[in-house]
Structures are given as structure tokens and as C-alpha cells.
Length: 123
Image (cartoon, rainbow, N blue to C red; front, side, top):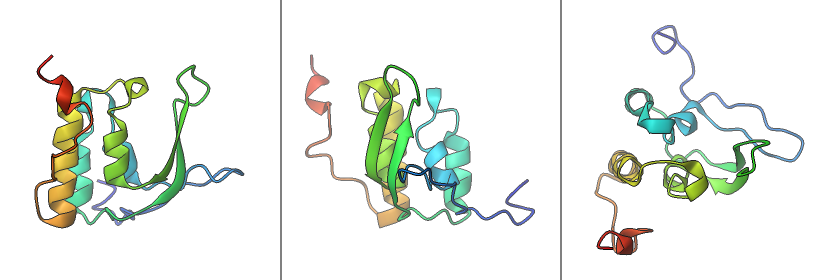
């Protein structure tokens, strides 16, 4: 509805005094709990979300014991951050989101020679 009413698919959030933030809506959709935002991620990408958007740093889990700062972030690298244990994401969802974003950004499947945790699949 917001997109239909002309909302900017690449509008940026504010940054705090230390440079955290500045993300666009796609960042919120690529790494959601239980992958609930997968349909929103696809809508945003199909509406022209900038997959090359880059932010200096994002804060994950503010004020939680697992608070984490992720630096030099793009939508694809933020999706991949879901593999960090403190993000509490299912690996299959993370890999599927990365593959979708990579196909949309680069027009090809992502290389899987050194995918984090792939070596654990047989154990």
C-alpha cells in the first residue's frame, strides 16, 4: 500500500551520533525472525530496492546481551549475517534469501565454494 502511494523504496533511516543506521527498508526484510518478511523482501526487490545500498554500520539486538555491530553492510551481507549464532536464524532461510538476492543483483546463482557452516552439514 505504501509503495502504491509513492513511498520511496530506498528511503534511509536516520544515523545516530556514532554512524550506526542509515539502512533502507530492504535491510529489515532480508534478515527477519522465522523469515516472516520473505514476501516483503521480494516485494521491495521487485519495486526497485537498491541491492547495492551500503551503510557504515548496523546495530543488531540493541541493549541485549548478544548486541552486535555489523560493519560495512549491504543487503546481501546483512542477509548473510543471519548465520551468526546471535541472530537466531535458520540456515536454510538465510541461504535461500542470499540466493534470491544474489540472483536479483548479479543475475546468477551465488558461488558456494566456501559457504559458512557448509562443512557442518554432514555432521
